[in-house]
Image 1 (cartoon, helix red, strand yellow):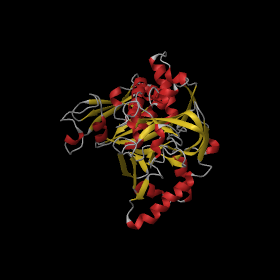
Image 2 (image 1 turned 180 degrees about the vertical axis):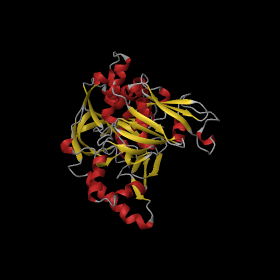
Image 3 (image 1 turned 90 degrees about the vertical axis):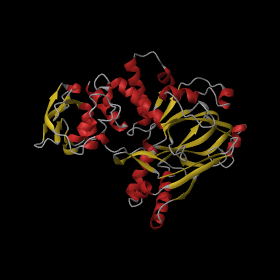
Image 4 (image 1 turned 90 degrees about the horizontal axis):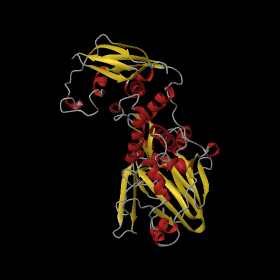
Length: 438
């Protein structure tokens, strides 16, 4: 790989450092570099913690570049005589977040993901054998696992996969929420699954037209298979929704739906840009009562539909939406009419045949998707008895698994201490940078 850094210099006063990369030039605050250094590990003590530092800023005595290719580093010597070595790949992917861009080459930054429309979507198929196999060397295994997870999590990809080549189910176990194929697949992918406060460890939620699971339909449209279930995000009524979801059809057939949120937001921004800000700012109250548990479970939260990536307000992190369970908008009086119109207009976009994918789900079908970027719903149950087996994975589990895999691949080039504090989008970008140049 060619060198990542071409040149570097400090300003006259030593409070700024400019770095010329192969595709862009950025200026960093010297103080930010000092705060972010991980030479002695990612954790700070009572003396080195950022909030304990003096108000006066540090100064740089000199800077230089060392190493070659992926292993290049920016060496910064401070006014106390200590020197820090910042890995070049780490510095490059963090630069757009915290530094001032002096110049960039056209195409050097990745375009904003636009999602998919129905006529352009091709759902990737993933072999169960590739998910479950344990016979690969460690690095090859980690890279393969990242490749599969990226098909679900990478914002530039569809965010949904179909798992094929599955073993035959144990129908009795599946109906009883244990030893499920869905749970097995998600645990192979992410390490663990959501632990429900009442259902317990590894138990699935079954959406069924018959048996004891059918009693869940009382007052909860998700479980009422006679109802149209509008596209929604799962766990919209939790303060922290789950990120990854899998759904397996055990018996019966149904028409199920998915919608790409980035694509729907892009349409709203084009057709009614004045309404888009309300999805960022107008909270909604979302709640439900689950009376099928011994003691009813009352769940609710208040949040805006759009949650942005921290530090990047124009990048979507998570979308929360559940028309069937939203009670009211908590918009200020003067903004209420427009906020309500924003919700109605967006809902109409979601239901367009150009945006809403409708698929026939039959026994043996298993889909896994990113619950933060895709909505899902159910148009109609066609054949009964029908049982769908659902399972999900919390955001923290998803992130920890992805970070561990990335650290395993990247530690050969960048010390793992530098990777712990990285936001997920930058970690993913560094993997592309390093793997593309090795």
